[in-house]
Structure formats: C-alpha cells, structure tokens
Length: 119
Image 1 (tube, rainbow, N blue to C red):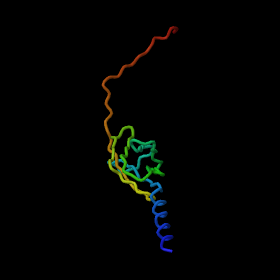
Image 2 (image 1 turned 180 degrees about the vertical axis):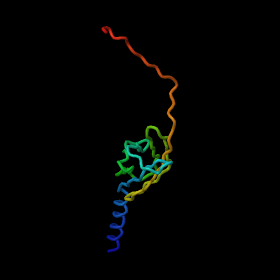
Image 3 (image 1 turned 120 degrees about the horizontal axis):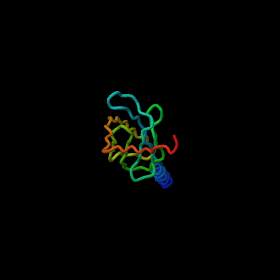
Image 4 (image 1 turned 30 degrees about the vertical axis):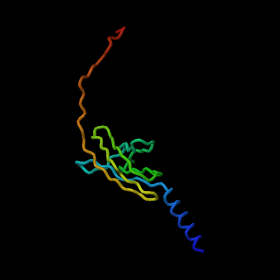
C-alpha cells in the first residue's frame, strides 16, 4: 500500500512540474497612468510574445517553467527589458509595467520630388 502512495506522489509531482505557466499583466503610460494598447511583449530568446489589448492587458500562456527576460516596446516610448522574471509551473505570474515616452530624433530628412512630364 505504501509503495502505491509513493508512486502516486511521484507521478503527481512529475505532472505538476510539466505544467506550463502564464505571464500576464498591464502596460500603462508612466506619466498619465493610461493603459497602452498595442505594446509588443516578447520573451527574449524564445518564440513567445504578444501585444497588449485595448485595455493594455497582455497574457502569454503555456510558458515552460524558468527564468526569462521580458521585453516591452512601443513606438514613441522607451523600450524596457525585465531580466530574471521567474515563471513557475502551473502558476500565473503578474508583471505590470509603466513605459515613459521617448523623443524620436532623426539625423537627416531627405525629400525627393520629380517635376511632372506634362503640365
């Protein structure tokens, strides 16, 4: 009887370890607190990623347990990378983020135009 209990315990631990985790959160503007739709969220070094919805929320399901570097990027805002974000098997990890605006600078603007052949 005890051997069966040990086997069931080991099987349970194995199944729990094999379950993926989920990373979720909300991305907002650092100055106004308004949520940001369309922010790109990537797990560096993997093919996992998503974009925030209309309320600034994101969810990345089915992540294997481990530590990840999570990158947030959006045009007109500074890019942020959070390192060592731990996702545990079978659990939901929340990572809420604020992004500050950045100034886009261009070195040079070239305008090219042609004169029409016929007036």
